[in-house]
Image 1 (spheres, rainbow, N blue to C red):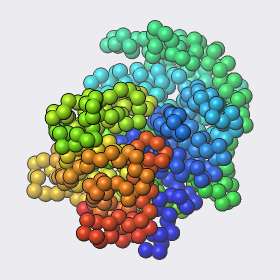
Image 2 (image 1 turned 45 degrees about the vertical axis):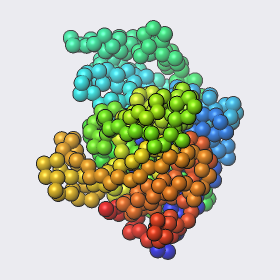
Image 3 (image 1 turned 90 degrees about the vertical axis):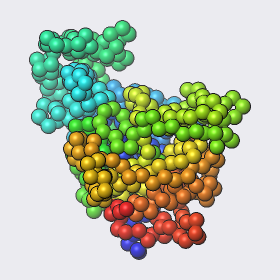
Image 4 (image 1 turned 120 degrees about the vertical axis):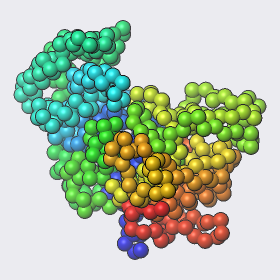
Length: 536
């Protein structure tokens, strides 16, 4: 127990804390990173690229980061983009420009590994071509060029940030890369769609302004290779002093006693090895990639926190065991919360207008979660599929990542539902009397399609919890829901999110009391099994 206490499970006193998504992404990792980043000296990213998005609401202003670490919101924090990240420099510069009003010296606080790969417009065009070629079998990528850039890294024709410091060599190799891309993907094919023909033409001419926006021209693109070379020459001058040996930097900061916070992009079930392949991202998103994406040994990692949404969402294609299709509930028992004088449901965290529902009517739960939770992608704007919380999935994620504690997010979105269901285990559809092993998650899509979920049903709550400022203040049924998740996982819940603001993240810093008065484990009062060993 003493050892568990020393691990600083909620991250506040951790020397090296890692925040990871435990589901299919969009769990709300950025908010906890933002909170913990206020008290660290270095915040780092280790994987992915601009295919992930963190939206932060600070003092009423929204910031959407796709490449920058969330530590940029702390003006005293140094930020690092590690060697495992692929970086589209125009996107990076745009985010830095948008931060100028908040911090005119933002550029001085971001450092990029010499070993991080540069993602070019050509990678994005190739991504679009390849996705269109798949037709109905497409993966549903963000078309941000992530896969083609990692592919270039693997076949060793990619360029790295360190190459920018030797620009003549960079220019020669960039011309070679573009010529290779044009030869491989530029020629029209017989079965090309109009969109593919447009993309191939853009690649042949290297006119990236019109690659994805034939009418208006892609903002920030170029019209030819010479413009691209000139643009990257300018980038090399602007970023020259920010391109560093990241391994030396992070180890020097650790030796100085700096607190380090690491934020993951995407999530466990999108990991290229452990996710629902092939409906995954192109990088490793789990804890092992922290070591390879930053150049630190496993023993440096002090705390790993898994971020879990209070329900489940997924963008793009692929199996989704708890997905809500047509399940409906009546909100008539919860009029005091949702249906007021204007008979409308409140949307959370955005201002796109009300989600209207008439009194005494049935609502589709999946649609309600989508609208009230504003389940639209930060990066693409795509509508997210919604379903009940899948703890069989989270247990698998915990086995892979070894979570010390859980940050449960978006609990407020469930307000108003009379009943809430939790998937606690999987069974095989052909042999439903047999529960599949705890933590087992099928590696093959056909096997995953065959699982049926075993559910527990809990009573919902009607009270507005978005204004709660402490875990104690939550209504009894909301606390029961959190407690049950903690008990089923065997991992302490250290934070609970009840709204979009920074102050809406509630710290669980005392035991959770069961209805019978007994005490459940929390990060400071542990009685759960070893970290990361989920059970039913």
